[in-house]
Length: 182
Image 1 (spheres, rainbow, N blue to C red):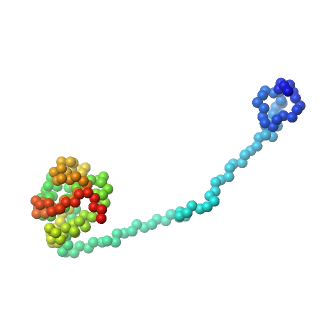
Image 2 (image 1 turned 90 degrees about the vertical axis):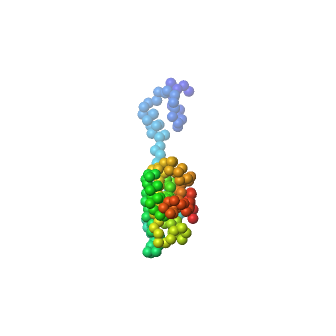
Image 3 (image 1 turned 60 degrees about the vertical axis):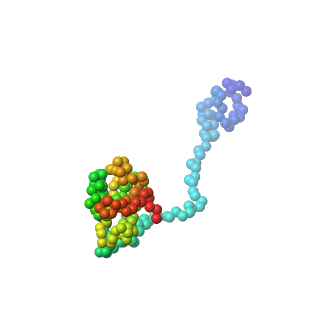
């Protein structure tokens, strides 16, 4: 069979890529007969539900703290002061008879988490060198405000560091370095 001569033999069902002299009507009829329209694929359905997923998200209320402190007249009083310069730390230490200085850093996670524990730390020292009738002043000195010179002066090697001073800052009564994990 020569492709340039007309032939009345049946044509194959697949399209022919050889040049031939078929009529345009015959070519259109063959293309229409071989072309089929594909339906879109069916959507994907889950055959089983996803376990433990609530159908409606309802907000849960945040629990309120149940530990409220009531200070009696005989308990230790606390005030919190932010110390922003080395001079402020030195004057805070010398002007208060009993002072607790927390050397902290704003980027330190245990430092931020231990702020509520300052009250408990002060209460635990109220039976030692402090009496219950004396006032305890608490100051926080942040790393980004004070720099390394003050930390080396007071021997700060870890954050947070708590230093308890008595007798007007002349005597160090106690020191706790690093995170308190209780």
